[in-house]
Amino acid sequence: MSTPLVHTELYRLPWTLPDNAISWLEPTSTCNLYCDGCYRKNEPNGHKPLEQVRKELDIFNRMRKTDGVSIAGGDPLTHPDIEKIVEMVARDGQKPVVNTNGQLLTMEKLRALKNAGVAGFTFHIDSGQQRPHMKGKTEIELNELRLRYARMLAEVGGISCAFNATVYEHTLNDVPAIVAWGQEHIDIVHILVFIAYRAAPVHRGYQYYVGGQKIDMAPISYAIERDRKTSIMSTDIVDTIRTRFPDFQPCAYLNGTERPDHFKWLLTMRMGTSEKIYGHAGPRFMELSQSLHHFMKGSYLAYTKPEVLARVKSMLMLSPLDPGLAATASAYLHDVARSPALLFKKLHMQSVMIIQPADFMENGTLSMCDGCPDITVWNDKLVWSCRMEELNTFGDWVRAVKEGEN
Ligand code: SF4
Image 1 (tube, rainbow, N blue to C red):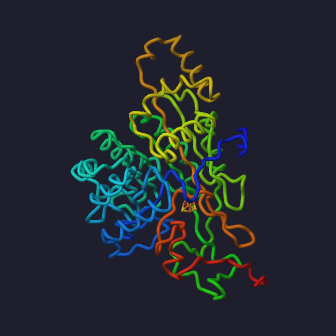
Image 2: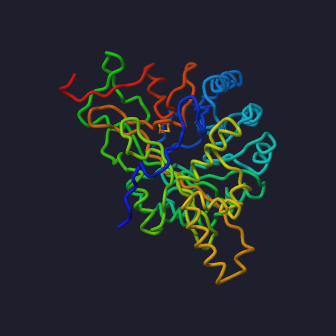
Image 3: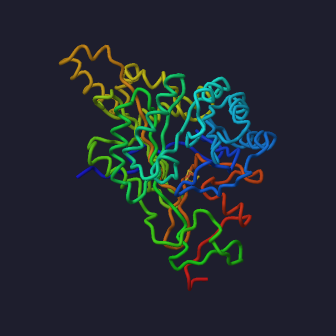
């Protein structure tokens, strides 16, 4: 049986509302796919003009320190001025990271975005998308598509490559195969993100209110009528990964606003080669890298450059400060003693982030990610991007009240 995770033994990432590693910019709500579990209503004419995008970036700059800006949507590659948007973020001194399904990415577009200053891509690829020519493909079969994008980025070079996948009840058991694929391509795949499926359960004996007004949740894109599992926990995903990788060991987390012991963002940093993972960074290493980056650059670290992730051997010099690094160094040196040629092989670092979005609590409140990195701008205010449809539809947050209690 795997060791249970105890939040007091991990590093609580220092991210807060005004001072965070990431912010979430949505220049469009237009998308060229319809993904199961998407939080945004797909608007055919959803592109924001550049002046609006500039205004939202200014609001971030005024209200929130940030290292990276996730440029999301909708699919941001549908926006006719995506290069200019990337350039605006880069000029502000932040890392522009494009969150896309990849459908519109060509080598020409990629090179233009690289010239504009793109720091990374997060490709959303999973079996819950209506991809033309890919219908019915399993998570494992989709690794081929993931690899195609990873190779495109590697060809251009110097761009962080991340993949995210929504995890449903029926795909939970496929997660270890994606983690194994990530290891196989650890030199060009820098981040894997698994997001537990969530939706608003309108069918479970709750009524919904905005202020004192009872409302119908049906128009909200993430409201569901049918019974689906919406409670996969990040620890379920860890346990599933450990069925194939028993040593898999997270080091840092964000808690829930209602539950300090829940892991809403759970980060694992593993080190090794495509053949073998030698170990995992520990909480002290994460604390050091976040604090040092904040001390030197004024913001918490997001999206490490690919060339830094390939300098694991230098990082192992910090072993006296972090037991996770020490164990990794020891496992690596043990293998070097048996096979000295290993010394000439690069070790890589790869992050695995597990996200457990909004949790519906028994009393109707929602437990959000405390220190939410995906905060966006709505009507000049900073808001949770995962619940923005409530604001778009009703002008305020929705409250759930158990029937019989109102
Ligand atoms: S609170 Fe919502 S928007 Fe923020 S990180 Fe969690 S799931 Fe994402």
